[in-house]
Length: 96
Image (cartoon, rainbow, N blue to C red; front, side, top):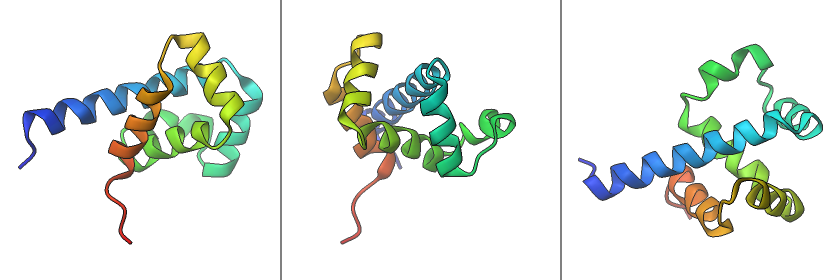
């Protein structure tokens, strides 16, 4: 059973991922590259956003290129640490 703290962390991580997606929507080149990498069509995004794996992919995509991460943070007032935390929460524990 998830604790309230875990639930709140998951909700915050999901909100961060959705914010990233909204920002990507205003960056056509990045959005096109992201969709091409995921294989998700623009018409499938509304459904895909309900999938934790898709949300984790959004955050991972942004974190893979620091200039994009910093541009997102600057444009939205989001701290980079919040993106890193969202990535950790959405990606789950490492299975090493």
